[in-house]
Structures are given as C-alpha cells and as structure tokens.
Length: 87
Image 1 (cartoon, one colour):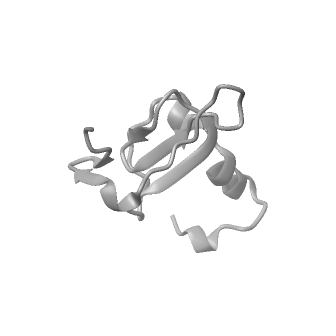
Image 2 (cartoon, one colour):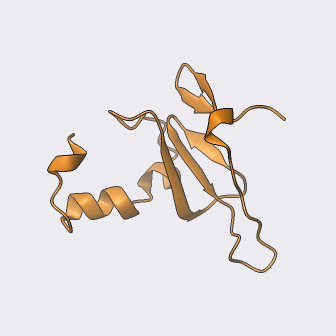
Image 3 (cartoon, helix red, strand yellow):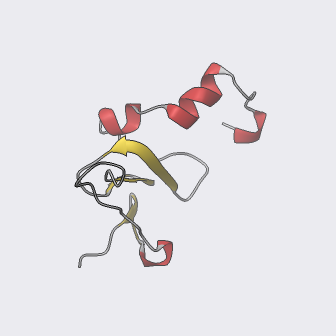
C-alpha cells in the first residue's frame, strides 16, 4: 500500500490517520512498509506496542493524567517489531 497514492480526505486516508481498530482489537499485524508508527489520541494506561505500532497517549490532558515521552533511540528491536526496554 503506497501511502503517497492515498487521496487526501478519502475514507482510506481518514481511516489510516484516525482509525483505532489496531489498538481496540489488539491487532499485532505489523504495519507494512515502515519501521515504526507512533500513535496518540487513544488513551492507554501505559505505552504499548502492537508489532511496529507504538501507542503512548497516557492522558496528559486529563486531571491526574500523565505525559509520556519516549526517546526513539532507546527502543529495542525484536522479532516482531520493537519493544520498550525493561527499566
């Protein structure tokens, strides 16, 4: 799937930008053609990977929420994509 071939505003483009199925359905299928994708705007308790998709929105905008920041150089590759280093 060629990202550059997407028509701006098309249903497919909007689903790629705003879709939440991967995190909702716990889809561990890697996103083809890229090393990593980074996602926000979908709350998670702690940063989580689904193959090469990193979800890190921990609710900094909420009262009592927290900001999550990750250094991409610290991410570690494994057979299925990336993982967060063990602290």
